[in-house]
Image 1 (cartoon, one colour):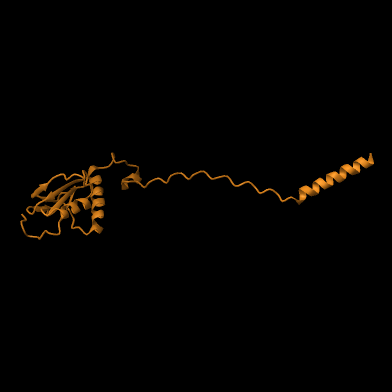
Image 2 (cartoon, one colour):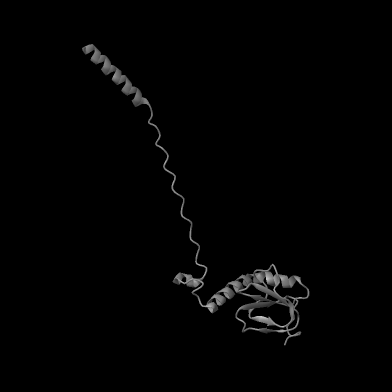
Length: 157
């Protein structure tokens, strides 16, 4: 029986040495982190930070913000622009396919009969004007500009 115990101990020792010599298995890869939640977009209106929705805002405030956004897009464009509207000299009203004042200014520049353009900041309406007429800077919901071909004093009211 002692012989059997010795044999069993030797077999156990050999088996232990074989497992000790093997390199350990690599650890499993870390779990894949869950996707990050989408970053919320900044509020479209400055009053949204105060918890107000567009429906809660004063229509004049909405119009002033829209005009400011549209004027800021015109600033780097190089096109003449001002707050207000060009009165009279109607040439093309509600030009289709124009969604911003830069597009309205470009449409006027591309049309040889256009000298002025108006863009309604809330309705996104572009009107092209002929040579006659005059400016009205009291029209808060419009921005207007002149084509490069326009020469001040010629045909104004």
